Length: 484
Image (cartoon, rainbow, N blue to C red; front, side, top):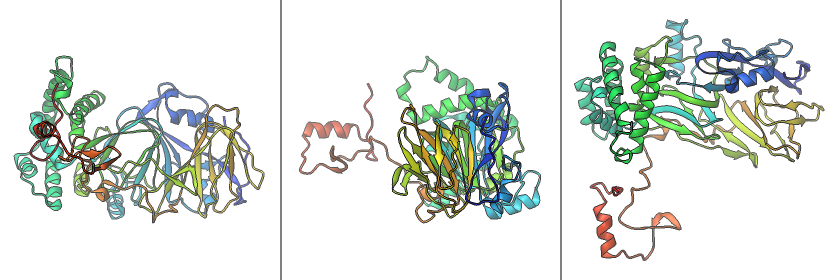
């Protein structure tokens, strides 16, 4: 358990140990395999880990649904002098979370007024996630062209969408507003499909996909990797949520694999569903979630359909930007003022001083061990799961790791956004539909190996090479990989 030493809450210069709040949901990771469980045990908020409990979330913040306290029981909110503008979490997802979106400020006020039982506050909830393990997520709508391909390829999926909505997808112009309207009509039609129809079509789809993904499949490379990944994701989701048509969500949403240290940002009114893995998550101080599938909880399809932006493409994936002149401090800055996150790494034999912040902050040790010091002589032992409050303008804290240690100390720190003019992350709506065209989308000109973005100067191509290249180009100039 964490040290029971309690510091005075009267002094704004102190670094104060915290008691976070844990949440167990059906999608959490069970027992000690869950990082949330291990952190809760280390922080002293549980005495033992139940191997059958799905430990899902650990909260650090002042939200009334899970308010953090100091070790003497004093609320963090009273210590800060008011609510923090953000909520900081650790998530351990063993299976998929619901298909969901979070409302904007105006939408949150309306939802809370009309349904305070299911929408417990009136704040918006943009959120940022930083992967601690390889993390799978569905984020943002696919491009309309991709969805059209999937409708043609999978008749079971097509049967869950009205003919009018399918026609809108197939005949849509290149105008962005027309694309959004077609996407909205298609999504609304799919979500409104009668349960008996979607359930029967899902059964047919699963039988066919199981056959196609088995050893009887002609050749795995006959199918583009993104389509194959989509099919396998559906099979996996259907096992977790039998009979739920939401298992077809990979036909609609981008399926992403995020590496440890990478991050993404989900703005309000953007659809997403986290699938598996562990992350640090930071958001505006809200617990509003509008759900539509892959959950036994309250579903609000009508409000979800009406609130979405219907932007195409996923969010930017970013590995952080060095901050304060030290590449051991990586900042993750969203385009919203309530929060930003820093991941700070201290290697064996080194020390690092945290930046002095003009705003309150909280941090949690995510891996490794070490100790701290500051001008007040506060020497704290850093172990994974211990969390602390840093008052605004408190003396800078220095982290140190013994040279004999084999691993680095790493902490995650959250505070009000101090770099709002220089964000590192963007939502799908801000990114737009620009997509990397792929490594085989080469023009006829040969590109320079020293500068891949430009043709090689003064380079001539032999007639035979031109003929071979032309054979493997389709009408749009895309390179087609020759079949073996």
